[in-house]
Length: 394
Image 1: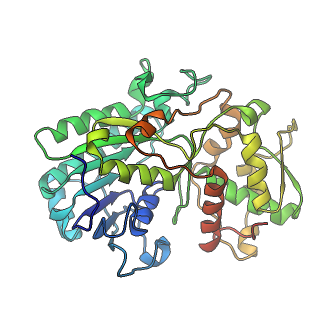
Image 2: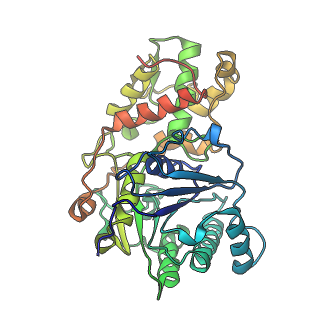
C-alpha cells in the first residue's frame, strides 16, 4: 500500500547530509517536501564537523520539521555492529522512531575495487545499525550514478538514451562500481523486515555544498568563472574547457533538488518503487554544453564560447591555481574542491551521447521537471550567499 503523507510522526534520517545530494535531501525535507506535516523530524548525519550556522539549511520554524544535526558519525570506526549501534543510539535522539532513511554517504578511494569495498562496508554498517535500532523503518533510498551505464569507460558502453532495463555492465567493469553490490546488501538486510528500498540514478549532479566537495562540477566551475570574471573583466570571452565533440554531445543534468525530491517521493510509493532503479534528471529532453555553457558564463557577466584549439590555454583548475587568492582579495573564500584534475577532464572525456530516459519514473508517477539552467543558477546563488564566490548575476 502507498504510504500516507498526511501529518504524522515520520522521522527522516539522512546519511551523508553535507554531501552534494545529501545536503539537498535535508533541504527539501525542511522545506516541507512533499507537503507540510509529512515529517515531524529530520536527523542529518555527517562525518566532518558542520555547524547549523554554516549548513545554510532553512531556519527553524514551527511549520518545518525539527532538525537534529549530528557530526562525527564515522561508518568506518572500529567496532562491531552492536558496538557502533550503541554509539549511534547515544548520538541520535529518537532513533527508534526513524521511518525513512536516505543513504547518501560516499567515500572516494584511489582505486575502483577499494572504493567498492569501503562503500559497501559503510552501507552494511549503516543498515545493520538501523535494523538494530529502528523498528519503525519503512524505506531506504540511495543514489548511484551513470557509471552504472559505463560513462567512465572510454567511448562508452551502451547507446543513449540510457534505460534502466539495459542491465549490468560487462565484467570486469560490473565489479568496479558499487551499485550492484549495494542492491545485494539491501536485499539481504531487508529480508523479513518491514522496509523496502530503491535506487535513483542521475548523471551530473548540480547543487550546493556547504563545506567542500570531491566531485562538484558546479562548485568547480563557480570558482573558475568567478575568478575569470575578476581577472579578465566582465564581458570577456571564456571558451568551453574541452573539445568540440564534448561541447555538442547530448546529456541531461540533474539538480540535487530533483534527485532529493524523487528519493523522498519514492519512499512514500513502495508499491511502484521497491527494489527498483529510476533514472532522474531535471528534464527528459536532452541538451548539450553548447546550450548550457553560454548561460553559465553569462551568470558571471562573461561571454561563453565554444572550445578553442590553444595548447597554452589553462584548464579551470590550472587557472584557479594561477590566480589563487583573487577571490579572497574580493571578500570570497572560494569553494573547496578536492578533485580538480578529475573535474577538468569533464570536457575532454565525454565524446558520446549519454542522456537518460526518464520514462520509468514518469510511468511510476513522478512527473516533476525543472529548467536545468535555473538549477545551475540556484547553486551559484547559494554559493554567493555562503560567501564562497564573488559577483552578481547579470
